[in-house]
Image 1 (spheres, rainbow, N blue to C red):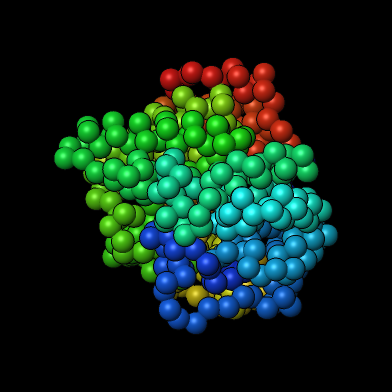
Image 2 (cartoon, rainbow, N blue to C red):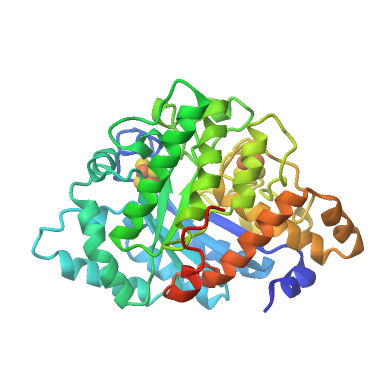
Length: 411
Ligand code: SF4
Ligand code: SF4
């Protein structure tokens, strides 16, 4: 069904990020759920998860992500829930991994192990499957995650996934590890920008060389951001200096993303929408009201492993109660928040905003016409590119000739 029809029929498309587990076996410096952090951990109970999925279906949720921790540590539960959500009619199902299953590719059972994983996942209705990468430098990435050999393992695993009709996305975590053994640091904003552009270019090239066909940037989220008014319930933040950036560094980093992404759009289907990145550049340039407010708590929700719903993973003080009690009247209120950069919610908020305006009738059209023309231009070019990428359907190969039209485009 065309997106405008969905918007007219029942407001904005709704998205839920469900934290299936907060257990993890990786050591990532950028995350509070790393295995070295002690504290109670566990998985969502299967019946609770199904109750949430049933309610998602009632509310017309179109996108559901099963996140962690490491979702694959839940074993058969993940596959069962993906199948259950598919039967419930939820179309955009996503999950991902830290890649631990790709470590030690030299082991004699590696190929069988990965083939089993690909077969099992391909038998679910999952639409997008992400694998995280922290650096273009394999040694730096593997040391950060704690999984030796996993980058070579990914290289060997990707053709197996492709043969099963699954096209994984590389989730590129933007931290100071981006630039490999020399941390992303510089004395001036201009130098920082240059270094980040180079790091990103190498990162995208390496991702394509590994055999990925899709990529997405995960923006840095640190504990320091909570001092600006957020409080993470989703513990994917850390105080570590490698994920903590000053505002001027973020401005330079997002400028680098804005300018580097188009140079690689012809070789990889890169989801990261430039209209969203441009808003973040404006935000970190002092335009506090720049860009669209986030749909977290309006159309998008985060559900912790106990079934509690929150406006997002970072407004932990706003527990909205069990997700299955969330009524229609609590939805589609007025978006207002710009407190963080969480790409899971900020990117789609920017992308869906103009569609919401178009669906709203004359008042929305007027607001669109009065808006920032350059921002609208970026949005239009994102929409065209998204069409060329088959709307990032991770069950379809890239359309090579169509994508090639984006090769070597500076913007
Ligand atoms: S970023 Fe992901 S893989 Fe790394 S510690 Fe956190 S949950 Fe685990
Ligand atoms: S901007 Fe969105 S994701 Fe970030 S704190 Fe606000 S509602 Fe949450």
